[in-house]
Image 1 (cartoon, rainbow, N blue to C red):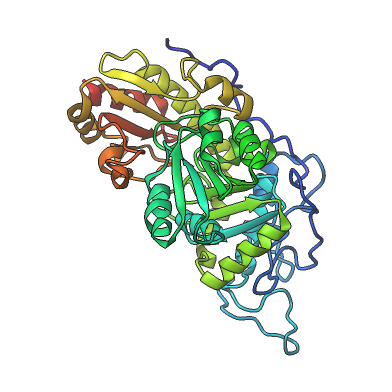
Image 2: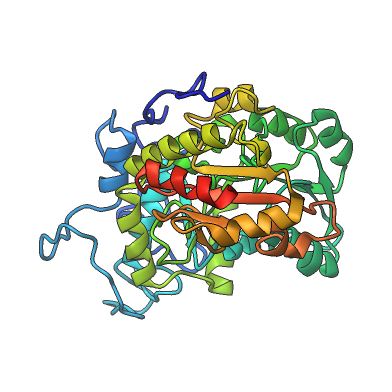
Length: 429
């Protein structure tokens, strides 16, 4: 099968359902400081009045939280490097007091990403792992976490090793099996973690179905939306309680900034996470926030090109004599394709493939590419290739999340598609 556009996905990105920037649930509080500083434990209110009703995704990515500077008229959000802010009276501030607690550049980023996810609240962190850690800090010894048996090795390492040693129980389960998920959720389960599409097998998880099971047991659903981005998928609208991003990837998009993000609608939970954000202090620097805001402005157009190129790469690999299996949600042959059609707008920019020659073939192929660079990470303008078993997923070797050593993962960039296909052709020869 060598399809062009894949069944069920449009040729270009579709505007998100929630186009008024007000979120998909939960009350949005008025904030006279524009979502800025809010005290040591205050959550940023990120929805509400950030633009006229009907603004589309690309318009929001450029304008939400990014009004011209009132003092100078500067079109770009200033990089506020100040670590502290003068107060007119003791305990009385103008929206910001200390940059770990709140910073104007960070506040703009938090409003923008929350608006793209249809969330009432957003919190930025120094990395994706810092964002995950903040959510896990809400747990207590004896609490139980359910995570997918196919997922990012760093998430597994953090839950199983760091928090496992501190009294947090965990279970890895196939998230596509609703009965298995239901059987794994018990009275002590507080959080159910899912990725979709997963890293690196690109398994598609039915967010709404998992949310129904988790909520029936009183557990919260944490959804990692890094691969899909808010341009292609909005987990909060499908029942998730918390959305996570490694902002290092598609949100930044240029391999030049590390960051993380949490988006949610529950005000009480947002206050608790804001307290952790301030108390633990894993916040991004103002310049990092500026770089992420710059990346967000082109997220929509970049994702269109990522998807175009990934579809072509998946079609090229599908049926190639050196390839045993292609994993891409946009292919009709993918086992999760029907779910992807329901909850995603396109198949995304990530493609994985199992090579016929196993580990030796995978190692040879990733060393032979010229346009695809052999490196960890993903989601940037340049194409990357890796062998997860010895790179990003080495930490899950001999665990329930172990990866086939014959698997290669491709982060398909926005280069000329013919060059990408020619590069793969010579590398697989």
